[in-house]
Image 1 (cartoon, rainbow, N blue to C red):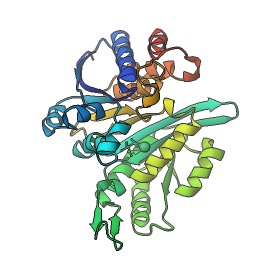
Image 2: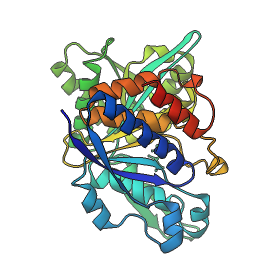
Image 3: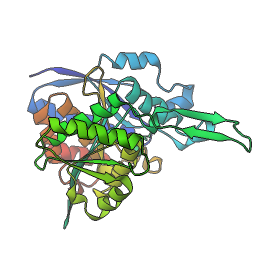
Image 4: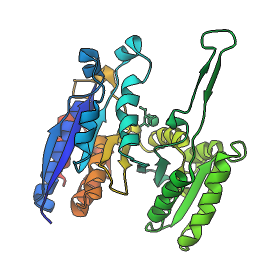
Length: 339
Ligand code: IPM
Ligand code: MN
């Protein structure tokens, strides 16, 4: 069906704007041939540079505007200069985490596909995206005294865990291997781990075709490096998912190819799509960054918007990203030529 998708776009900082420019180029080109749909891109000037300029991080009015849009495409935000003037991660938390929480993007989907000689990486991580240690529970007592206490709790609700696990089962149910691995640390995190495992076991009978498995997160780190081909779909909590997906990037050709989707599968708000990599300030503005992760993130967006054919074409053009070389925009042009 031909339609106009209304998409907020945030280039952000560092290499963000460069890679997002290529992702937009690819989306416009593929839609023109695949479905005839178009995109109304709505630009937002946000990121560390904006905070340094006038103190704006993410206004509530902007967040409200986004609620009526179809999706958000984001490059990368953050700048080491912010850390000097403000608490570390101010902009990352103020934009990324605020968006994930307020728009209820409760799934962080991160696919890893890469083949290199004998090693085959072909799996996806479903990371819970609104709870756990990211929920901000905790605080200081007697701050800046020798008796200071700092606590940082992990919030795990039955509702939050269950909707994430059910989504992961749904993904595993449509893959070829139909294997879902729960990753946690239930030998030590006996409360949250117990809730995750119990919920997992209770949802499993709804998906009789899916084979289930469990691994402790430390063991999973070894398996990621030594035997990544065993995985199909992985489901895990917010912090374990954050760490594991950086490792996933490292074993799948580098974080420069790693894409992500912050999904609100209930569609009560727009979902957000972003490369896993950061702002890479050392190479910013030089057309040296690969736009592949941003382009694959845009493919995830197209798929979520119902543009399955366009999404498949972009994925196919990015299947062997090592073959692309040249400047950021050369690579974008080459992907367009391969659609
Ligand atoms: C990620 C990032 C973020 C996270 C940071 C920038 C807040 O590392 O998307 O993986 O920890 O979730
Ligand atoms: Mn991370």
